[in-house]
Length: 166
Image 1 (tube, rainbow, N blue to C red):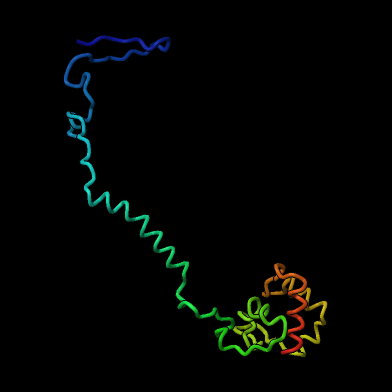
Image 2 (cartoon, rainbow, N blue to C red):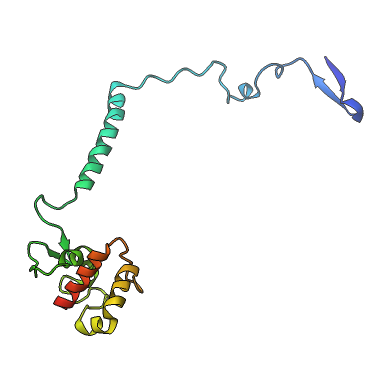
């Protein structure tokens, strides 16, 4: 049976069917898309799967720990300028340790410069003067980064070291 329903003040009418196979059933059931029965619960994870989920964080922690330990054998000192600390000749001049930690990576353990970094020699140092050298170390210049984290005493000892060995 069908009837006519009014759509308010618009004056439109729509024929609606209130009996037949499409009434009160989801559309997909007639096309095989929607199952007639509720979907069953997924099976509980197996014991092996639960164990794997517990092991994953442990594996991640182990990997991070290994990465943090580094590849250097225990007891071997870090290198500066490609030369291990045990092989570097210590000059005994104050400021050498600051140079090794802050400068040798680019300027080299022998002050000769590496990969485009200029060497540090007496002519360059004389052209800068002590004040300008301190400012360059603290503020950086060109591609050279600033070493503002160094204390004034460390900068003074570095300048003394450079003048003594360059």
